[in-house]
Length: 119
Image 1: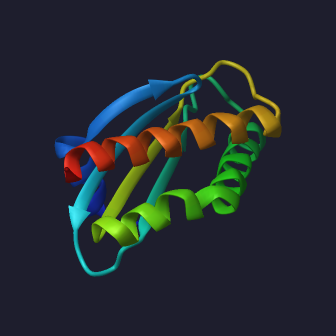
Image 2 (image 1 turned 90 degrees about the horizontal axis):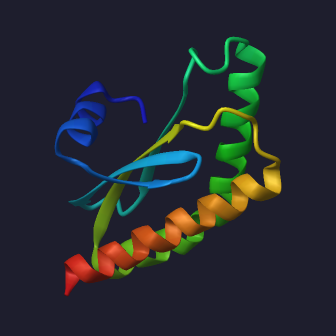
């Protein structure tokens, strides 16, 4: 996600929940794109070295890339777009398998919340 307007809308009107080590911000919008836009942030305060921050972001991006079909299928059914913010708030770098497991849990929760809001 690169649009400042979308990022502001996500942070001001989006909803959130927490799945360790991620704080998840999300916003379902009606639209014709039917896609997910993702924002991944890692705290510079907790991970001083850019190498560590980039490693975490690469792992999260890869886990999302492999599992995005879970949420994209739901978006096609409900005819919506999803703005998703993943804020990594853990103090250590988790192994890739654990990161992927947590991301799948996040995507499943998003699907449940979309189903509840759709009816």
